[in-house]
Image 1: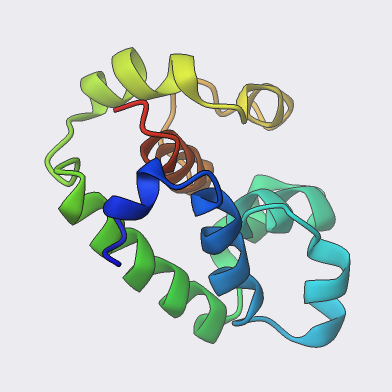
Image 2: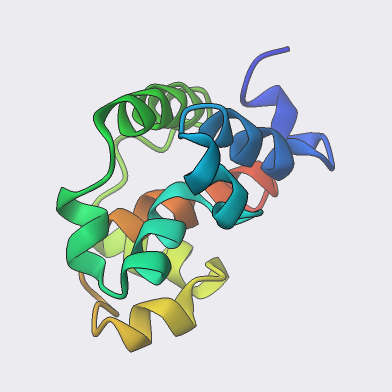
Amino acid sequence: MGVARQATDPTAQRHYVQIVSDSVCRSCNASKGARRLYEYWTLSKGCLKAAKYDVPRLAEGKCLKLLYELFDEADVLGVTEDDLHAHFCPRCDLGLVCEKEHSVGKLSPLCLDGVATVVLRGQV
C-alpha cells in the first residue's frame, strides 16, 4: 500500500508515528508516545532549536525519507511558503506548539509534522 493511499486509512497517522518510533532508541521511544518526531523533540527538549539541530541522524533520515515519499505522492512537494501558510497552517494541529515557540508564520521542522498530518488525514 502506497503512502498516499494510506491517507484514507484511519490508522495512517499511527502508521507514520510507528515508523518514526521504530527509528529511535527505546528510552526516547518510550517517552515519545504518539507525538511526531519534531513535535516530540521540541516539547521534550524545551525548544524548537533542539528539533532543528539535535534530532538523531538515523531517526531524522528515516522520517525525511518517509515524508518525501508521502509529499511526492500527495503532490505537495512544490507547495510555496505562501500556500503553506494559507492552506496547511489553518488545518495543522500544532498551532499551540508553534505559538509557544514563537514560530507561527515561519518555516520550521514542526511544519513537516503538520503537513504530514494534514496529508494523512486527507485534508489536502
